[in-house]
Every structure is written in C-alpha cells, then in structure tokens.
Image (cartoon, rainbow, N blue to C red; front, side, top):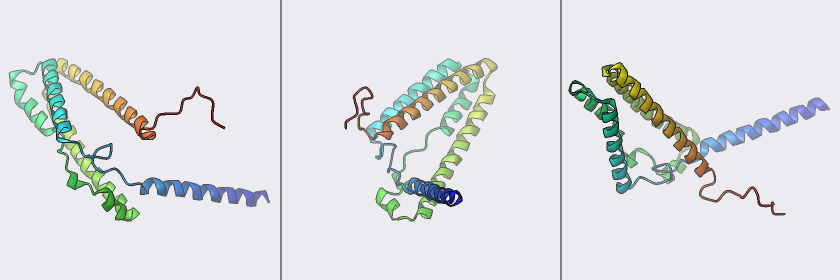
Length: 178
C-alpha cells in the first residue's frame, strides 16, 4: 500500500510542478518598460542627460589623452543604448492571442536581439580598453565594478517592488487577523 501512496504523491507533485511551470511561461510581459508602459519623452531626455554626465565624469577620471579621443568617441558610439522601439514588442492584447509556443518563440527572438546587442557592446568595450594605459585600465575597472554594483542593487530593488505590485507589505509586528 505504501508503494501506491508514494506513486500517488509523486504524480501529484509532478502535476503541480507542471502547472506552475506552464503558468510561469504563459504570463504576458508588460508592454514597454519594466512598469508596463513605454518611457515618456521626458524620461528619455532625463536618461540621456544622466548618461552624458556619467560619460563626462568617466572621461575626466580616465584622463583621456588627445590620441585616445577618437577611440573614446568610437566607444561611446558603439555602446550607445538602442533606442526604445514600441513596435518591436507586441501589445498585451497581441501577446495574449499567441499560443504558448508562439510566445516562447517571441521571447527567444527578443532575447537573441538583446544578446547580439550585448555582444557588440562587449566587443566595443574590449577594443577601447586595449587603448588605455595600465593606470587608466585600473580606473576603468573600478568604475565598471561600481556601475555593476549599482545595477545589481537596482535590479534587486525593482524585484522587491514588483513582488507586491504597489501594495504595502504587511506589518510583521502586527498580530495576525483571525
């Protein structure tokens, strides 16, 4: 009898895992940005201002010489973020009409485009890095590490915020309602 119970429990576990997996893949991603909407012109302009400011600061910290200026400008051109293209992503309604395999294909296509863009940025960074003197490379390494830490913290913060979708977290010190 215990062998029968074991098989039943294993079957229930397998069905549960399958249901959770299918539900995770079938979720429709929000259109546009991470908060379900495309960035406004004002947000894009603010981003560009901040990007230009960070570039100027990095230029100064690296102490780019006149002979390195051309490779600096090429590096900036090659690593410029891709412009936001709302037509590249299907709307929520269009995505909902797709079958699960079609949704997965769309996601994979999007991921491949992002990967190709990332590969271009990596190659451009390596080319520029090779033009830097050892002291400049140390500075670049430190600045890049700082940027990565900032990005990681921001991603972690965004995940926390999206887990409760704007609802306040329950107060852990308050007694549970019965």
